[in-house]
Image (cartoon, rainbow, N blue to C red):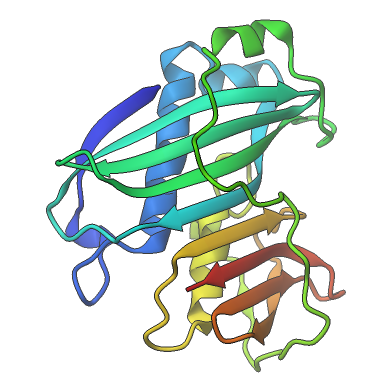
Length: 235
C-alpha cells in the first residue's frame, strides 16, 4: 500500500465543518497520482510515452465525514489488471485507525493520440505491487440510468478551472455539480459514478435528476442527451 498523512483543511469542509465528499475524492485521486509517481510512472512520464490513465468509475462508501483539523491517513493499492483495465482500492483512516471512507475504482489505460484504450504493457503492470482487494461489497462498474427523470431549468457551462492535465473536466467536478441536486439534509453513504465521455472547455452539461428517496441519480448530458457521466448517491 502507498499512503500519505494529512489533516482536514478549512478549504475542504462544509458549513458544519466536516470534510465534503468531493474533498474525499480529491484525496483519493491525489493518492493514486503520488503512488504512480513514487514508482516512476507519474503523469509526466506516461504522457511523454503517449499514455494516460482515464478513470472509468468510482464506488465510494463513507462511514463518517471527518471534522476540520482531524489527522488522516490516505492509502491506495492496485489489486488487478485485465487487458486495458486497472483496478485500485482506496482507504481513509483516522488517527485511531478507524476506516472513515473507502473506495473501489476502475481505470482505463489510454493512448493520448487516438483516445482509445490500449493494452497495459507488462513493464507498467509489473511496476505495481499487486495486493488483495479490499474486503467490501463491490458494485458493478456500470450504473443503470432510470427511465424517468426531471430536467431542471439549469445547465452548467464547463469553465477553464474545471479542466485537468488530460484537457477534460476532472472527475471530481462532475460529482460537485451533481451534488447541487441533493435535497437539504441528504447525507451520502455511498456514491457511485460512471464516466462515459469527456466534457471539455466550452461544453455545456444538461442534468437529468431522478429522486427515489434514499437514492438520487444525476445524469449529466450533452446537448444531444448523451451522458458525460452518471452519478448515483445513496443515503
